[in-house]
Image 1 (cartoon, rainbow, N blue to C red):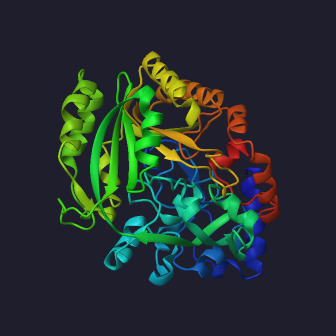
Image 2 (image 1 turned 135 degrees about the horizontal axis):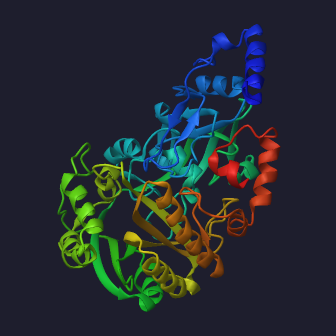
Image 3 (image 1 turned 30 degrees about the vertical axis):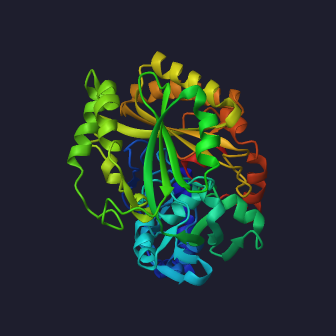
Length: 473
């Protein structure tokens, strides 16, 4: 019998004699291993148990009695084992999705961490309120977004950390604590972008904004002119609510800027939110064609993009914020899959990194659909911040095979991109494939030592973990 299984059985016998096992919301006895997958179907993790709590009491009970490693997951959009640990307990938070309270007068809302953004939008929209900061798609859970310190297209907002007022956390020993900028501030800063290393986020308190009408405009900008364009046309315009700029293969040399400006014009779409449960067969076929047909990149530039962006559009903010990630989902992920990478570089290095990135893509036969440019001011909250100064982000959406050789090939050019980001005083984002070397991780996240010391204070036995932290922490 393996040593760790022997240790587990001894612990379980001791717990049984104390009458604890019978009180659990799940079985601790031997059974077949369970596999936790993410959206890409890459890097699945075999765990010993899964628990899906519906209340804080069930969550606390699970945390108290499980004797070994614990990992936590939400929507399962992280792509490299960040939601599970080999042989451990996986806590699935998706059933803890209740609205705790909403105070429109103070522009604050508190929700359980397993609530998805779309469910929160359903609550806010009738009151003409809107999520302040979130990703471009509404499928993610609120707790998961906080755990990865996500960001979106909102001009001047940066990471979600800026919109979080307070958190309720269950520590590894089952203790419930509140964390904010005033209460347990070191814990608060470590949980933001902490990927479940400190405990399980149970509730999130957020500032919200007003829902408004927004109008889309599109501009083609030469790559070298983009930073000055952003400063003059986007950052300086208080009416610009959302912005991103797409770079397209094979040259990646022109930025298609997509701007959403606050307006009073008549709506071009009547729906206040994107209808749920739509079918996206056409989008699936288009994405396949762009990556598989010989003239896919040319088709994207000359046909697909003009069709998507050519018409005028005036919609509610909540409509544009309620996009469904199902529109990106391929028909199958059996032999190939679609994945993300992201890099952050200071504004002064934008053109240099963009040039190196394009060279790496061309020399390694990548199948990149597009690179989306975003912006973030300095993150003053998260210990493991990815925006330690004002940065542009490069969000890479690409297709790859699922075999071992495919993973190794992607790993080669991914490490080259990480090296380029580090060379230009930047960093890379952690929710994706774990191709970085240990040295690259340490260079990209210099506050790792501070993070470890905070973890040691609140989780001294190292019970909270996942495949990301097992590799790098």
